[in-house]
Amino acid sequence: MNADDLVVALCPVCAHTVAAPFFDGGAQPLATLGWPASAEDARQMARFPHDFVQCPKCTHVWNRSFTYDAVPYKNNPNRMFNQGSIWGGHLAVTRDLLLAQLPASPTVVDIGCGEGHFARGLAVARHGEGRFMGFDPNVTAESGAGLEFHARLFEPLHDMTIFEPDAIAIRHVLEHLTDPANLLNQLAWGAAAMGKDCWLFAETPCIDRVFETGRLADFFYEHLSHFTTQSFIALMENAGDIVELAHGYDGEVVYALAKLKLPDSMMDTAQRARKFAVTAEASRSHIREELDRLAASGKSVAIWGGTGKAAAFIHQFGADAARFPVVVDSDPAKVGTFVPGTGQQIRFRDSLKAQPADVVIIPTQWRARDIVAEMKREAIRADQVLIEHLGRLVDFSSGEHPYR
Ligand SMILES: [Zn+2]
Image (cartoon, protein in one colour):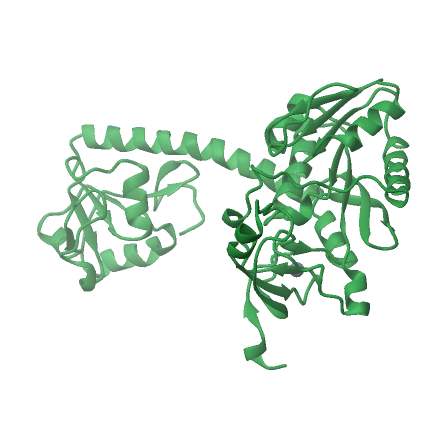
């Protein structure tokens, strides 16, 4: 393998960052959404790069030069072919697969539903018992015949708790998204937030046969993303547990039924992050109050450090230059520079020999032991040294903390 044969490109399925060139189709016009009005228009159509690469990790194939701006979805919704007896049979099989998991009166959301035939088919099969919704910003389908149509994007983090679906269907949509993993991640989190079991039925074209047959006509501009069975599984695993995976239409499509689910460890991390955020907000306002009291006490205060973490301390806790003018540093290279945002000029630590501070605040807890030793060595005296710990300013020598 020659490094020159590889390119840096982010896999839309598994986020691997190095890809192998797969098919350079040159510059070609849109193939299915262009709708030129005349032969002359057709010949004049803009050309776009067909730069397909493959992910060595999950085997996904995509056009790394694709851009959405080139595709006029608004004017020309993708017209999917839904007639034909083989296709009709496939639709019935997948519809029944999904219905078998659903309660008597289910709520189903079809994302990117097009004209809504799949959701309508579900409604008809259930004799209208339930709520069957289609979301699609690119078509103007009518509600009716069992379908409730929403002409907008479905936003899982927001909409799952509003509509409380028992199932989500996404058919022939994921291959049109530049970031399909994003939608599946959001569906899994939306389901977790709603706190109720939810099924996901997803289906895309499958290019497994491309490898056996070497055929190239699959690779046109509007089909930016091509799933193999392996990359489809990798994508679905973002959303939950795959219960059934199968192929239809003579192997040309792959579909899966999955239970939307997140690993417990991810739920735990999100919960801990939420807790940290709440505590951080309380800590910030508490330490701000402590600094307010310190400034009002009339004691002289020096802050040891004025860049990096020390500057972050000054910003977060409001140690402005008017109330906390003295900032010192051990590093002569920093002396004479200014604290970003607040503007205290950083002095050399020796300035504290001539003008001692009553209180020294050391924002970098992990360096406090060294700095206190340095103060002792240099005969820099202060009544108190304070560090930040667990949302409080604590006394370095007598307080409870792990940095001594
Ligand atoms: Zn990948």
